[in-house]
Structures are given as structure tokens and as C-alpha cells.
Image 1 (cartoon, rainbow, N blue to C red):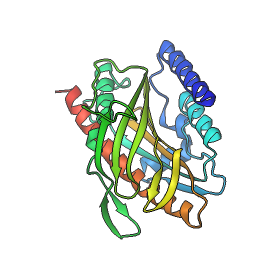
Image 2: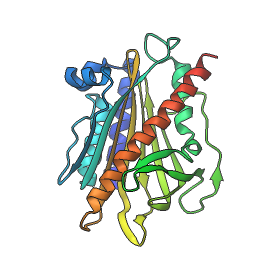
Image 3: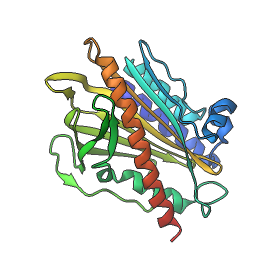
Length: 272
């Protein structure tokens, strides 16, 4: 609990500092370095799966994101980590001097629409075919009462927001997650944490509170830089790290594709 409080405090202080100075984003090269920037601009899709004391490799060089991810990594001490980077090309009508307030609000609200995760597909390596990721996805009022709520919407995105969601995963079952959202000029972050154990059949694959999936959207000139990482402390069962790692890598692609669709809708709404 103490570590969680410290992490939240650090993030809020950094977000406040960036907001006060009007930071609207660094260049792509400043955030990931010239080599990765060149790869992304060439259409490559960097993906890294690590086991055995994994460490963050692709995290963008951005104050809030670095502090957040390094704190989570040290707190969780994961046994498996999946990182990926992607570029989303902004439409021609998008603001040229960073995301506008309206674009940011529309983008934020589309990301809050957790119900739209329902039915998204991912490629199952074990089955060699596409498979549904979340069969159901609903915002709920809390982890105990689990009363369904509509997706929230804000005219002005708050600096921090916590939501709870009930999501039925066809691999890991029906679970409750906490989603923490952070926003500041040029950056939107959300963190998914499992409040219930993730089970594969009768086997607990990841214990409760042992998963952090972090999805970060950073303004980068004509693009949005997407950085996603899933960290988990998997059960100490032979082959479990491999199973969890393979599952997370395929699911990361599904969430990136979901975000791209949500971003399309956000920019259309902002400029209609």
C-alpha cells in the first residue's frame, strides 16, 4: 500500500510540473532514440518478450513514463515482460502544434470506453487462428458490488481517474481489474491491474495484483507514439512464463489495433 501511494504521488507531482510548464511532447527521436525512431518510421513493429529478471528496454525517455514504469518494475519484480512500440499517424486535419484540448478530450474519452474492448480479436499461437480476447468488458462501480455502469465521458480530462472493470477473458476467465488513468499535455497513460487471480483452467497463472499492463500515448510531431508493456509475476510452474509471455505478446497487438480504431473515432469527432 505504501509503495502504491508513493508511486501515485510521484506521478501526480510530475504531471503537475509538466502541466505548469506546458509540455506538449518531445520529438520521436528524443523519446526513443534515432535507431528505434528510424525503425518505427520505416513501418517496423518492435516487440520484446523477456523472462528471467526482465528489465525495461523500450520505455520512452519521458519523465512521467520513466518514473512510472521503473517504479512498477521495482515494485512488482516481474518474471515475464512484454514491451512493444507503435506509431499512429495523425490525420491531416490534426493540430500541428501538439494535440488540441478538444483532440485530447476526444482521445481520452475513447480510451475510457472500456466496453469497446468487448469482442476484440487476437492471434492465438497455440490454436493457430484468431480468437476473441474479451468476451465481455464492462465498467463496474467497484470490485465488490460489481454493478455495471456506462462508460464515463469528460469534457475536460482529469489528471487522475480510477475505474473498475469486469472483463471475461476466454483464456484467463472472468476477472475484476482496476484501471488508473493519468493525463497531462502530450501524454495519456492507463494502467490495468488484476484484482482477481488469472487462471488457465484449474491452474492459477498470475496471482491477484501480480499483473500490470501499461498503455501510454505520447504526442510526437505528426504521430502518436504508443508504448505498451505488460509485466507479470507468473506462477512458478514449468512453462508458465512462456505461456503467459506468448499470450501477452499477441494480446498487445490486439490492444494496439483497438486503440488505433478508437483514435480514428476521436479525431473524427474532434474535427466534425
